[in-house]
Length: 158
Image 1 (cartoon, rainbow, N blue to C red):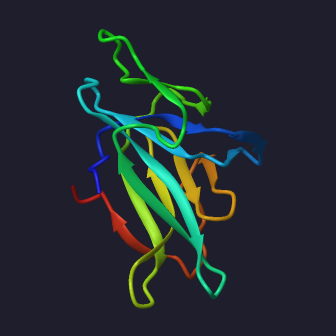
Image 2: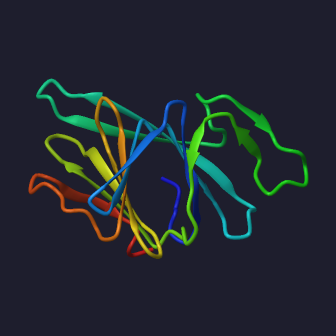
């Protein structure tokens, strides 16, 4: 997995990205790609978000590292642009988005199964949760998790 600590969370994209505000949280449904870049814009990429359901009903989050925002429609930017692509989709981004830490939570029955990921930014947290409609929450503090969720990985020691 790409080392995101110290990179900038450039935004999130979705073909049908919807949002609403609830109890000091900004909640998005159906994000498809998370965009990141180096502070100097030399390296950039995307996490494609997908999910699947286990026979017991648990939802598993899948993160795929990729250089383009596929499956979303996009065009290459002109050569002098800091971004490589113009994504033709709904998007969300914010300032103060330096990634301080990334936490992956899930279960370990026979193998590690990722249920959610938390990205700690300078002033808030991004919580991405697996499900038929993937949910992304922007929170003021680390989210409260289920007692079933175990920490699978963190970038805290990088």
